Image (cartoon, rainbow, N blue to C red; front, side, top):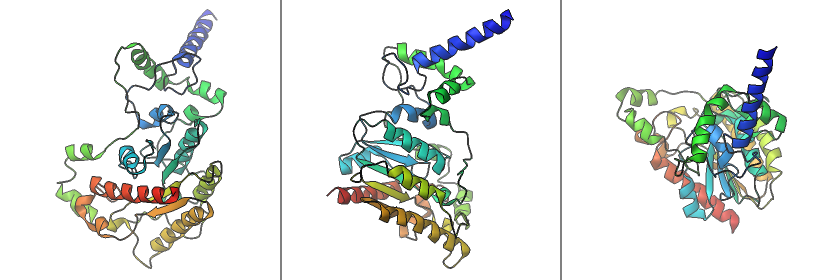
Length: 319
């Protein structure tokens, strides 16, 4: 019995300490803590970045929109952007992060950019993800958050958090969340690899096969955007894909792709100041192998053009 009581007391103490030091800077601690977080993955770092009042615009999605730069969008629109992307996620996780961002705005957002890749075409209303995601961290329920603190990875993060809070000049994670994966690909030799280039030419079908609907991700996104003031610009981006990952005209994949595109085009048409920017199309940039590392991950040359298209829509909408 004494061992059990001691264990419960230790667990309670650790949870209390975690609540106070707020390992991921969620703003839930009663103490005034240092801004920001130490370097860590974007899934947990989004809790801090998403509530930073400095940012008035946000980018959402996965690695297919990761190279869209907050700095470039700010330069072109005047809006300070934060990137709240999380690699290997889908619509369900994106909606969680979008909800977190909107709940923590002291003033209305000035623009939202949302990547809607083919994962958003699923007919499954559960919109399951492939990788674990810390839903508890972004929950509006205090009990869910407290329950989430009872995790081994939180225990591992606590010493790093204490080091960050008490260091005079700690290393801080980049506040705007931008993460350029191109350098990592280059270090691994992806660009010059002839096998990669040959594989890139092989056709793949990533349309999702949903030609008849429903499209629950579009419906849930529409419901969440209804919380926004109608004057807030929203850009839906269909991210670039290499030509061999785009459906053959007239094929079942093309029918599924068109049905999904139409679902998000209807969403854009149904809401004021909303635009669909579609880069999943046959255009010269998407036929150049040097612009891609694989079928769905493009390089900076395309990212700059995508940013220009997004910014142009935002500027046009705000006139």
